[in-house]
Image 1: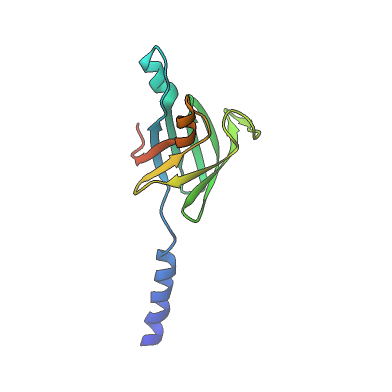
Image 2: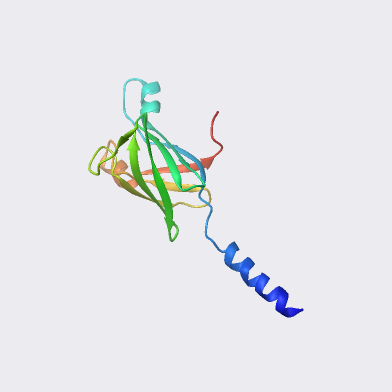
Length: 134
């Protein structure tokens, strides 16, 4: 009897200890100082969708970047592969590889080194997990 449930219990513990589930939709806003508040909000908006198949879509500065993601410890690693259908080369507007750090339950700190002030560049943006807008 014990021989049957002990392996099942061990398998359940191993499968259940896979770490945080980061898949989902995240959004946040980076401060953009402009005369037009509507334009500032659009430019500052960051949206990230981490798909369960290991792909992601990142919308930043009204441009969409796509690529692959994985976890390393508790961090989320993004490898940007394309933007608007073109291959991305490291050293552009957004680095080709980014690391997002967990910031409490359901949020990630996004920092691509961009921002209007030195403090913004250092701090990054908190992206909060939510439902994807329709």
